[in-house]
Image (cartoon, rainbow, N blue to C red; front, side, top):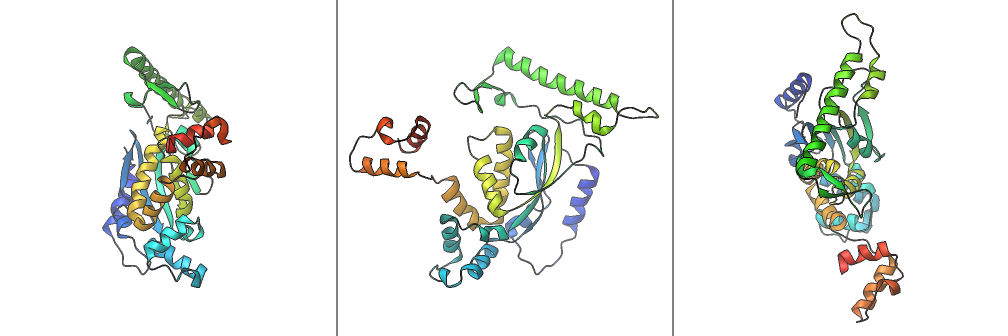
Length: 301
């Protein structure tokens, strides 16, 4: 993991000059503020700023729902009620701004989450660093034979070595050519905005990414899931650890109802009722497709 000298100076200056504030402060998040957490070989996640804490969620809910929440005895109970019944707007009262350094192919997957504000490093203005994501051998896997989006068996021996060498040599050669094409030392060269198009998808970029807690939870539910691609999942897992320290009550409810919970269709509920009544139900008589039945049996089989 590498930070620029300017970024290091910024972090040191910010942490050396703490200021008193009247705004809500999360002690758990303060411990993360500006600290860089390494992800993958050269990547990082660091908190730049945040707004709100568990109490901000509760305050927003009580303003919004008034007497409807008086039966809830404590903040934790109210937050769990909100999460259980999909009342999302109180969670939008909390926001987080992160500095993320990540491979370009992960960024292109990440940007599909459009409910965020993003400002990315500009390769039209600046020259990208010679930093590439090279997977650990344990992450070099063949294409899955049952999942078109997934990985199968890990490559072994000579095949693993061959693939690693291709990844390393292609990255080095493309960057050498990138440098050779750029304008330098009086030579006209090629504009940066054009020279960058020859770089591979495993080069690192970075951005500032700001979102609210509701949309962060949606990101984590998809990307911290065991089925998510490894390279984006490790970022989501680090962000989940930060979030757990930031809003522990909200994160515990999210973990219980979203990460650890299951959403059932009407057909699935009917099958459960029939099974509880002692009936034998197979896929053919369930009304579910083969895919739905497989997912149902993974949980309830």
